[in-house]
Amino acid sequence: MTEKQVNPWLTAIAVMFGTFMVVLDTTVVNVSLSHIAGSLSATIEESTWVLTSYIAANAIILPMTGWLATFFGRKRLLIGSVIGFTVASMFCGVAPNLTTLILFRVLQGATGGVMQPLSQAVLLEAFPPQDRGKAMGFWGLGIVVAPILGPVLGGWLTDNYSWRWVFYINIPVGVVSVMLTRLFVFDPPYLRRVSTRIDYWGLMLLAIGFGALQITLDKGQEEDWFSSRFIVMLAVAAVAGLVIFCWRELRSDEPILDLHVFKHRTFTVGTILMTMLGLVLFGSLILLPVMLQTLFNYPSLQAGIAMAPRGIGSFIAMPLVGLLTAKVDSRKLVAAGLALGGWTLAWLGNLNLQAGYWDFFWPQVLQGFALGLLFVPLTTVTMGDLAREEIGNASTLFNLVRNVGGSVGIALISTMLTRVRIAHHDTLASHITIYDPAVQGLFRQFQQMFQMRGGSAPPDQAAVAAINGLVARQASMLAFIDMFRLLGMIFLVLIPLVFLMRRPRGASQAVAAAVE
Image (cartoon, rainbow, N blue to C red):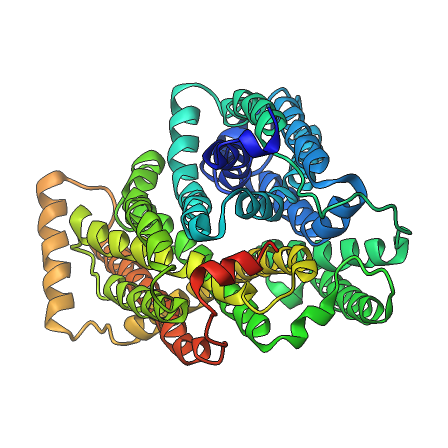
């Protein structure tokens, strides 16, 4: 079968198999950590390296995608990545100890890191200009839905089978992906393999900078940030590595990442917006399941299911946005997505401890719809002013900043949630006094309860513990409310930035520019 005979939707399905699998693996393991720790005789803190190692390797390899595609060829690199990811998944499933599991999670992250930008470029090239908005809608659907589906699938597999099936499930998907890629994916005529000098110093600085940054963000809260010498050393290594890397890449004739693309104002603003979008998306993905499990006592699987409505909203929005990008100024769609997303986060920020399932359902549906309005149009506008030869490198940077934003969002929200909760607890507790009639009434209730039940603990002590529990629960709720409102405010503040980007030349032209 020749390239001209391939139905572009077959190509879309081929690249989405691998991409969906990789993005899914960023969250599918989360709910299985306690099972992994118990099975491999490790602590929960040690088991979090299963997540950190994957994300760090992913962050290191992603910036190299454009250079690797030039060196090996895009199709060859894509097939090799899927094979590597699938083999690593198999070995993760049979890992006898935590060290081995972490080693193969690093291999998973390294092989999976190149798939997102590669699949995006292949997908756009497979479609004629007038259909590329639909293609981006299809691709964006997988990127948005996969992190939401991950906890649901991971919880179901772990509860019904074993945590090892979280990795085994990738094997048949990977096999199908390789077969489809071999049949339906082709390198464009203008893309030729080029053997260039390997910038070993650039590779080393890149690995040090992004690796140290990712581990700093993942482990910072656990180690109490800069009170830990380990975190301080990592932070210094991250800053030094990235600064020297940027200096070298700007002066190099054959850079791994060409940073000169930031001379385009629209691209620069677009990457800022995508960074913040990653921050808000992943930050909110951390907040909601934690709130459902700690305050509303949802089991892990039910918490994952309760987050599914966001995927429903994105599923509805993506095909619609793919059609609208051909008719509407994409900047307006991005602004509408930011406004709607900010409003839904403010909606979640008005919940209370009496909230039920449907109170979570509707804001999430609309939030998913808002994310659908953001991903495709933002990519269209950001890439619209770039020349064909700049696109591969720019796509790598664009995907990189989303992942970095997500890592920052997770670290920032986790830290702020803990500290804001403590502050609210102290404030609420300072207003409680024995002279308060409500407190006196609670003490009398506990005295009566213990007299009826013949309790062994002193009633006053039990009443103090109960009051502290109520205060802690209310403080946690207030902290979640503050975080949701903060994320919503970030979305609203970003709206003026959208109109600093140049008006796209037309959706089909702008998306076409992303691959021509």
